[in-house]
Image (cartoon, rainbow, N blue to C red; front, side, top):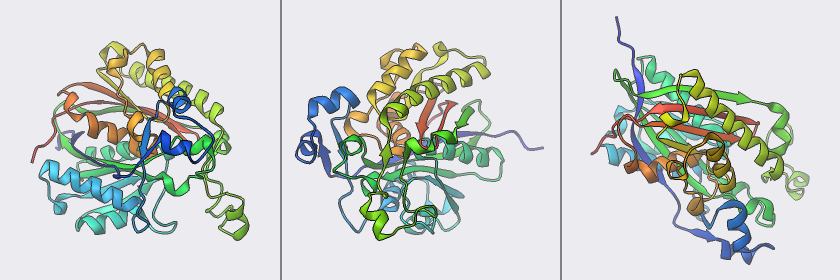
Amino acid sequence: MRLKSNAVITGVGGFVPDNILSNSDLEKMVDTNSDWIVSRTGIKERRILTDPTLATSDMAVAAVKNLLENTGVSAEEIDCLIIATSTPDHLLLSTASIVCDKVGLSNAWATDVNAACSGFLYAYTLGASLVESNRYKKVIVIGADQNSAIINYKDRNTCILFGDGAGAVLLEPTTEDIGLIDSVFKTDGHGREYLLVPGGGSKIPATVDSVEANQHYIRQEGRIVFKAAIKGMTETCTEVLKRNDMTIDDVNWLIPHQANYRIIHAVGENLGLPEDRVKVNIDRYGNTTAATIPLCLWDFQNDFKHNDNIIFTAFGAGFSWGATLLKWGTLRKA
């Protein structure tokens, strides 16, 4: 009889490009100003991948290499790699397979997950399920997006929001009472028109007309998304706590998707969580889509203690949203 395994995060890694796109830079590109951007979003700067020879997979590779270096785990030990991304290198080829090849994960199978800003939550829960099955010992989950590839830098409604980056976590089994506790996910396809890249798929293939109509850039109805995100994240955080007979007082940290500081603040306030227990780095990176939560883990890893209760929550295109409750373990050190 096999003992039940829980899936615990034992390592984190991250990568952001060196190039900084500041609010002052954006003032020269569109009709906006830094004070307005900060007051409406909380963003002061974002990182942009400017090398035309690089793509989402390269940022993911850098994050995985950083993770392996931090943990002392070898590439050959990895059983599976899952990457959450909305900006794959290619339409017909998984970005995960490219990452595996470039890192040398010779014994791993790999797949992509596309749930936009909620993608890391979905991929993390999928990866944890594989570990909990007792068939996989080491699973890497990545959130990575090169949003600059799908941003119209003449559209001030979107170009101020997004940045590029990648974060990764290592999941391993444990018989300790730590790791993933529960997840609550929701989907509402009625919201699909409010946040999307219309072109590039089978519905609107790439043509001269679609390119000239800017259909390959992000489009967003900001006010609708803003309200739905606050409501959705608040409700799923509340539900996952209630389902596990816990209250907000039991939560040590909230790590929300970094889309907009006003959304983050509103969710924390709705839950009754003090600001010093809500992790925020949107001021430095902007919205990196699937990478926001793992980049928070990378940035703040030294703040988390063994047995800390943590909630991840996100809202993204689809609409898709959810919350994940976990108990922190101890990170490997190389």
